[in-house]
Image (cartoon, rainbow, N blue to C red; front, side, top):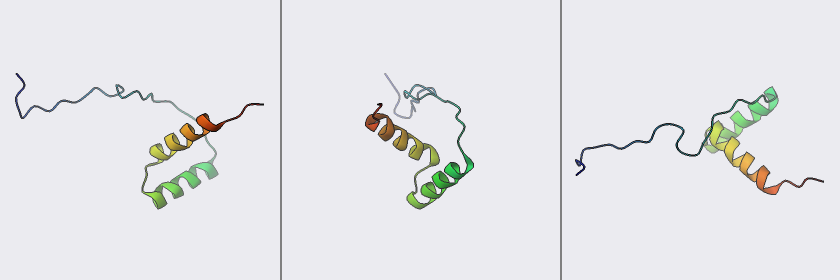
Length: 61
């Protein structure tokens, strides 16, 4: 039986996310940081929102 004061946490990386490294232009990074400040989203959250939208809406010709 689990005690009531037990805190259960998952190991990092088990949320379906993967850490990667990308290179982006400085002006793009500045734009992301401006959007993050304006929207109160983190840069990471915005990048994920933008990438998800792009992947779901891209058309390759």
